[in-house]
Each structure stands twice: as C-alpha cells, then as structure tokens.
Amino acid sequence: MITSQTQMRREVLEIPVAVDRLLHKGGDDIRRAADAMRARTPSYMVTVARGSSDHVATYLKYASELLTGTPIASIGPSIASIYGRKLNLDGSVCLSVSQSGKSPDIVEMARMARNGGALSIAMTNHPDSPLAQVADHTLNLHAGEELSVAATKTFVNSTVSGIWLLAEWAEDEALRAAIHDLPSKLEEAVNIDWPDARAALGSRNSIFCLGRGPAYAISNEAALKFKETCQIHAESYSSAEVLHGPVSIVDSGFPVIALASGDEAEDALASVADEIAAKGATVFATSDKVRQANALPVTRTGHALTDPISLIASFYAMVERTAASRGINPDAPRHLKKVTETV
View 1 (cartoon, rainbow, N blue to C red):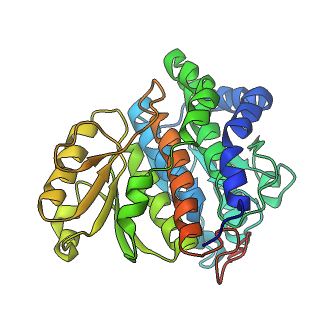
View 2 (cartoon, rainbow, N blue to C red):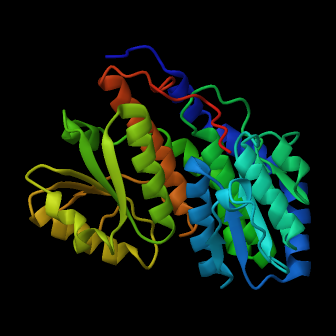
View 3 (cartoon, rainbow, N blue to C red):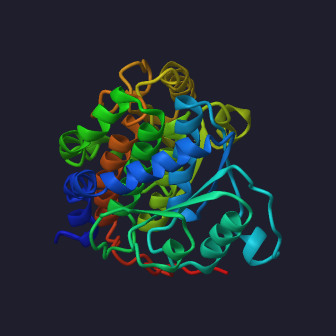
C-alpha cells in the first residue's frame, strides 16, 4: 500500500485553485473567442482531440446541443495526418483540445480545419505550443504544471474553459454564475472520495462506469482512469446502452458506478442503476433517486451543465485512493508517459 501522498493526490487537491486561476486570468481570451463564434453563427461545430481531451469534447458536444441547439461532431485526426484528406468546414467552428498542444495528428487536423474554412479555437495548457500556432484563438487553460501522468487539473480546466466559452457565446447568465461559483464547489468535491465504493471494488478487476448526457463524458473519463491508474478493466456505457448486451457479464457483486448529474437524465439513469443492482451487481450512483443501488455523496453545483465537473473531481479523489490501496503508483502508470504524440 502506498502511504505517502502521491503527486496525483496533490494535483487533485489543487483543482479548485487551478479553476479559480482560470476564472481570473482566462476571461479576455474566452470572451474574444465567444465574440468570434457569435459573428460566425455556425450551424455546426467539430472537435479534434484524443484520450482525456476527447472526453472533454464529448462533454462539450452534449453541452452545446443542450444549451444552444448547435450540433458538434468529432473528427478523427487521422483523416488529415494519415489519410491526407481535406474536409469542407466552411462556416463551422473547430474546437481542438490538447493539454500539451504537441501531438502531430491533433495539430495537423486543426490546421486542416482552419484551411477548410472553420474558425479554429484551441484549448491547451501551453499557449506557445504548435497547436496554438495553427489556431485563430487559443484558450490558455491556466492549470499550472501537471507532473502526474494521469491528467486531472488539465482535464477539469479544459471542461471549465469549454463550458465557459459556450456560456459566453450563448450569453447565459445562470450558467456563467454557476461557472464562477465552481472553485468553492470543487473544494468540497475533491474531499469526497467515496470510501464505500472503493471498499466494494475489493480485488475485483472489472467494472462498469455509466452515464447519460453530459455525464456520459465523465463516465468515459472514469473508465480510462481506472485502467490508467489502477490496472482495472473498466468499460463506460450510456445507461441507455448497457442493458442491450453488456449487462450479460454482470454477476453477483459485479461493481458498477453510475455518474448522474442533476438533470433530466437522472431518473432514467437511476432506474437502470436499480435494475442492474436487482441482478446482483454492487451498484453505486451519484443520485439520491436510487432505491436498490447505493447512493454516493455528491456536490451539486447549481446548474446541470456544471454538475459533471464536480463529479469528476470526486472521482479523481476516489480513483487515486484506489490505486494507492492496490500498491500502484498512479503518478507513473506502466507503459505510459505524460505526453503521447501520435501521427
């Protein structure tokens, strides 16, 4: 068991400060990019990202479609980098997300999108990176240095930067207020680490993560972090899909974590969580609407679109503890390095 505080743990606890720094330093860039989007009036947007950053893109897809009615499609970076194809993106907006801003395939796809007529907006923790150089607007994440291989601060600041951009574009005062209240909410969230869920995992090496709507993106990120930091085989499903086949592998005590925001999808997700619990699984849900599953404590943020951000903060606290209890150093997962550059 790892008893000393890991770098990942320190960085999880720094999340509220990192978000506060973004809110104090990032406003001008956010507003300029939002003004450019308003002038463009895109009928659709596209995203370019991989790994944790692609989970940010999934979150923004749901957020944009719910908030503004503007659809977002994910483009595979290999379309430009490997296949050398060009897309007609005239009149659209391209959101590229990369913590390092260095991966050649992300850079090449963002370059192609701009050349294809898209307004190119890059979100990165390195505003002097190659990605920033091919963008019309760069949103500095202001997350500070992140040393642990597992992205935590940068993931959260990417989600905040993206949802803030959408809030400014939509001129949504309620969402703006919730975003600016996030540091205090996240201070609470990072100190919730779900010990009952950790205990239920025991020696199990397989788990389902469930979500719906914007929280589905958080489910994707949770499954990745289980694999990355704990060497647990984790699969993420929409609660609308898990009963269509994957539930067949559930047996007695099979662990499931259902991540629910306080939105219109919460009832549906809670119902599925209860149904899986009735089959013998050990199910935990971030909802007080479950009856057979176990309710996890959660910090609500005052807005359904920012709830997923507090969910991932608590999950990061939980998964770091899980890794440490298994004697795994989450700062240096095997076979991985901090920056992955793919072509």
